[in-house]
Length: 137
Ligand SMILES: [Zn+2]
Ligand SMILES: [Zn+2]
Image (cartoon, rainbow, N blue to C red):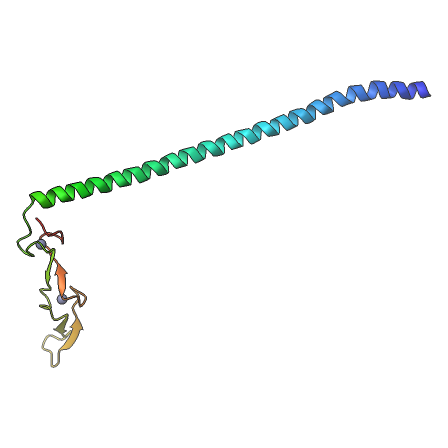
C-alpha cells in the first residue's frame, strides 16, 4: 500500500509537474511577450505621434516665417495703396463716418430709421477693398 502510494507519487508528480510548470512559464513568457509587444507598439505610436506633431509645429512655424518674410518683402517692394494711402482702411463709404445710415424698407418712405451701418458695424471705417487691408497693392 505504501509502496503503491510512493510509486503513484513518483510516477504522478514528476509526470504532471514539469508540463504544468512549463505551461505556466510559457504562459508567463507569452504574456511578457505580449506586454513587450504592447509596450513596443505604444512607444512606436508615441514616437510617430511626436514626430508628426513636431513636423506639424515646424512646418507651421516655417510657413509663418515664410509668409512673414514675403509680407515684409512685398511691403518693401510694393507701393502703398493709393485708395487708403497705405493705411489698409478708409472712412466707411456707406455711412460716410456717421456709423449709422438712414434706411427704410419702403420705396417712398415717410420716415427714415437710423440703422447701424452694416458695412462698418458702427466702426466708421471699412477695410480697403483695393488692398484688402494690407496697405499696399
Ligand atoms: Zn459705415
Ligand atoms: Zn488700400
